[in-house]
Length: 316
Image (cartoon, rainbow, N blue to C red; front, side, top):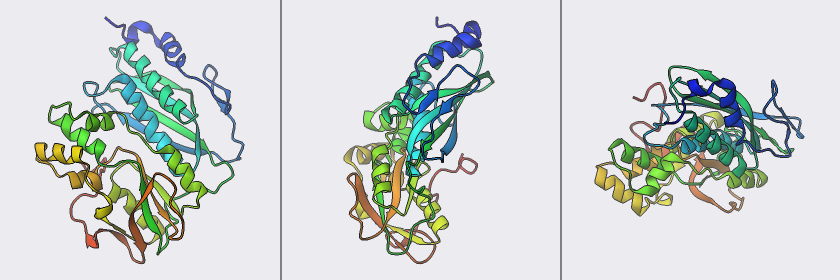
């Protein structure tokens, strides 16, 4: 039997947690002191935070500890990337019941460290505490490298809307797992470990993208944030969003709508952006719509009926 966190104790647990964290040139002082020190050559720091709650964002019978670690890191790193910044560091705070296996939390640490390492960042500290429900809160830091931040409010009429990364896969995986199945593996794997297109974000920033967002809650919902912040209308062209065969087959088997997964499913952490019409889209980006005068988001020129994505306080 694996030792629980109560049996291991706080300080041994922290030692087991932090031994998996690497370092980078940006880390001037890592875990072990009252606070970490991270270099900020640009003079500005991009910062964001997200909380994952067991039973809401993940289930331990559906995901390994490393899966949850990868996801907890990715949801934050994608937000930093969407601002056009280079991720530099993560801080992770874990609240766990006393009977949580220490081995599970060590797997979580490995997932966090591996995802951070994939983008050249490092986990530099955090906190552990006891609680009735398992939660993981991660804060990410990033460096703008001398560029202006890419916000949601820069889209202009005449821009093209482009997408990098995959959408609908995590929603399909969630539907599969919710029905008690574990296949197709491609959908389930997408739910367990998102794959944000980190490199595409930096390419977009270098090419002069006007607005960008991490697609975490659903394509239509997140494009709605760009439309609202920019004071424009956005139309999505579904002919540019073909349904992959594996997704179509799974949706048919489950009696679900694959097109809805594509348009409203979240947690893939793709990137959506508005580019000037005369910009050659960087590799990995594909055109999926247009920006015009007006307000709101339409699909193939028509108003979308029903939910546009996930809302933590409205969705049950």
